[in-house]
Structures are given as structure tokens and as C-alpha cells.
Length: 220
Length: 316
Image 1 (cartoon, each protein chain N blue to C red):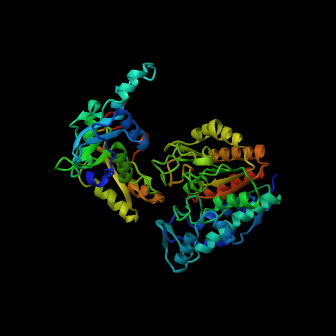
Image 2: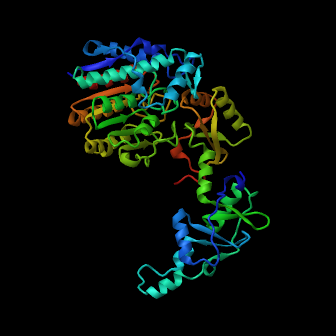
């Protein structure tokens, strides 16, 4: 839930006075795309990405060796983004998802209330968490249900699942194109799904063919 | 007509999964009845199982797991590793007999006593992992038989075709790095079906890269999709691998009337699938097929499905 629990703590950083070729080496050595730039007190002062470096360097077709060497030896400070958008360890995964999407970033540095860099959270960390939250690493079966959009529907589903002594891996509720209906996707940690399906059908719950699930509008 | 073996042992009925469990002894009784009603018993070579030598089980499962399974079973515990795995005091012995039966079937096919064989075993095996039971499975019967064939019979191109509607995670994981054992599975798409593995991009690791192939089928699809994939994919892939023997993890749970999945394969669709597998074995593997029961829970359909399956093996 909180960034502090899912961020990468051992952050690879770089000094503002390092040259671009050093930054490039660090990125490729660690297989990463973002390098926070910190000062001697670990305060975050900038960020440099593989894209910043690629745009700074001349194209690989360039033959002007002197100019390539000159750019490669120029300082990180010259190409970094200053005062980058960061996130706090007490912000949430939801905050990070929205912030990354809004700004089209691949990662956010995590700083404490003194401005010190204490971690980094990337789309990679969020994907791992998403896989975990969905329960994808646990053996199970996904049910696709269509229920009326009114209070108490979920209780019926949960009761039926509990009566069959089945555990939940996760459960998602989503919009459905038809007004007054909701799609519910329980991920259940069992192979034995037959009796529960029959029970749900008898309760008036319809099983939704996943091929027929459209969120906002039914295609013409 | 082929010399087809039928492994059936009443001791397989002793694995008691309690009330309301789909993987129940009646499944085997239904299969036996199917053979009887179709007049097949006199045409088949019936044989019973011997308990497996533990050294073969240890080629796939850890010693720690085997001991844990035996101890739990003998202590009277009735749920093992996951709530799906209901067992009784006889489950361990029965599981050892299931492995032993499939190994005996392998010996008979390799020695030429039989051309091919159908093993009606319980408990099933393809979900069983190195160190855990899963999805009604305790010992991976097919994986252990494949290792037996590889080590004891020096067969170095073995194909396992898994037609159960669920992905055989245990079998895939056992051979993911082994280029000599090709695992090909057709199953309901793992986003919707148990156990959630067997995605198209899972294709083996290291030296085994390319020797695992998964073909997920979306819910609601059936005969046409299966027929297409056999022509487009299974045939060329196995032709290229050119196996010396084909092991089939036979699950009848992709049938339209089986409520364990949303795949809609018809009775004829099942026959067509098996006919192609047997034809492949004729072409490349001297006709050698060892078919081993995995899932399939619709008691009304099992007799006919199993009888049709065996008729195809008999080439009747």
C-alpha cells in the first residue's frame, strides 16, 4: 500500500559533476533507466534518464569523433532534470500509479521530509505488486460474473464462495457497458469450480463470457 | 488391431477424497464400465500395478516432500498442501501404485509386449510439483515415467502431449530445462483456468528453450479451435521434434459437459484430437503411445470418452 514498502531501497545514484559516459555505464551495468542525482548530503537535486543521455549524444552515424568525445565528457548537471517530481515514502501505490501515468514517467525518486533520497519506485516495482495483489502466483481459477448494480450482491457471492470452503486470491469489480449491471471477477484458489458455478447460477447470478465483457460501451 | 494395454487396478479406488469431491473413485468405475459396455475388455490386455520403486519418484519429487506426504497421510491428515487436495490414510500407497502402474506400462511398451496403453490411474499427476501437491495431484505419474524412459531405457526424444483442460504446471516445471523431453500442452487460457500457468510465452529455459510449448484456448472455444491448432501447430512442432515415444496426459475435462472448464470440446472433437496424436506416433514413434489419465469429472460422459479413446489406440 505505502511506497516505503515497495520501493527499491538501494538506489544507484550519480554526482552532478560526473560525465555523461559514466552515467551511461552505470545505467547499463545495473540494467536501469533512471539515475537520481544527489549532493554530498544525499539531497535529491536532479534525475537523469537513459533517454536524456541518448538525446544528448550525437547519432551513431556521426563521424565527428571530437564532438562525440566532447559531449561524452560533459557533465551530468548539463542534461539532468532539476528538482524532479518525487514522492514520499508515506504516499501510496495508488498515488504513484496516478503520478506516473499523468507525467508519463517510468520511475519516481522517493525522498523523506528533509529532501533526502531514500528510494526509487519504478513501473517494474508496481508491476510486481500488481501481480502479487491479483494473486497471479497462486494457483487458482478466475470467475467472470455479471450482477445487478445494487447493494448486497457482493455478500451473496462471498457467502456462496465461503459455503464451498474456497479461499479468495483477489476480487475485482468493474463497470459494465449495460447500465445497472456490474462485472465481478473473483480469483479463487481452487481447481474445483464446478459446484460453485452451479450454485451461483441457481442464485440468479449470471456467468459472464469474458469475450462479451465491454467496460464502457458495446461495440456496434 | 493393435496390442493395446489397459491398466486398471481396484486399489486405485482406495484414494478417498471425501464427500462432494470431483476427483472421486467413481470416475474409474465409469471408465471401466465404458470399456465393458463397448465390448472392449476382451480386445485389451488388462494388467494391474506394482508399487513404484521410490528411486524413480525421487527423480521428480524431493525426498523431503515424499517423506512429508507419507507422514501426513499416515497421521490421518485429510487435507494436504491446498484445500483442493483431500486425502485418506491410503492415499500415499495409492499414489505409489499409480506411478508404479505407469512405469509398468512403459516397460511393456518398450519391450514390445504392447503397442500402446491406456492407464486409468488415480490420483492424477500433472499438477504435482517437485515439493508440493496441487490440484488433486500428489506424484507426477507422467513426469516420473518420462524420466524412467529417459534414464532406464535411454530414450532421448520423448514427447508429452497434455490434453487435460488445465495446464500441467508440474510436468512443465520438471522438464523446462531438458531439451530431450518436449512438453506440449493445450489448455484453457490461464487467465481464466486453474492453475494460472501455461501462457504462450512459457517456452522452456536454458538448454530446454523451445522444448516447452503452451497453447492456451479461450473460454467458450472448442472443436474448431482445437482442430485448427492441431493442423497449424501440434503436427509441425512434433514433426520437427520427431519423438521416439509419445506420452499423453489425458484429461477428459475439456468436454462441453464437464463443468470444470469453459472449453466446449465435443465427444467427436476428443476423438479427432486423439486420432491425430496416434497418427503422429505412427509416423515418428513406431506407434508407441502411453496415455495416462489426468482429469475428467463428468461421470455421464467418461464411459464413452474413455471407450472412444481406447478404440483409437486399438486402431479398431
